[in-house]
Image (cartoon, rainbow, N blue to C red):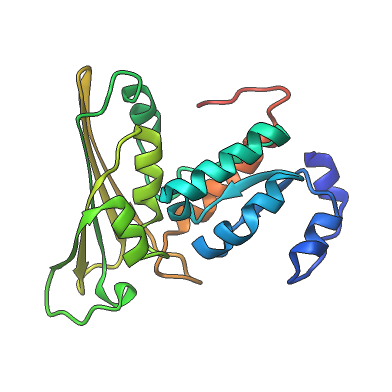
Length: 218
């Protein structure tokens, strides 16, 4: 696949029909949760799908419908790590159960649309609520929840002094505990998300392309 990509010329279109007409091996979604709900089933009938707007998968009906499609079509849904780390540990913990999963996200106040004078908690709740309140900023909450098999507790802090997006993940299980902190540079094009999220999607594509041989670290 990698050699074919190097020789190909990209086709620009705003219509999903045009994309599917090209018979792609894989489609990368980087649009919105609504786009996942509206188009993912059609895509998965024809190709694999990388989902960046992972918050859409927190809706039980949406996830169930997409999994039904992939069981029939034999396709795959890929969820990149995005702007967080520690997913390998969470997936391992999920085999024996995760007793606690918490995400504390601190972002520049402007990127959250908050006018505050100092660090201010603007949200406390569950991951399924967080991805609705901040659909472009908290997809990491969904990614963590899916990896761990339990819904994360989420706290969002708007801080006008910050220049980076900070994610602190705490998880506990019968076999151990983990705390991971990431301080990510915001994306220049979209400060609501981290540059790391885009790099994560690229990494997934590279691993898919090299799946037939070589070293793949999971």
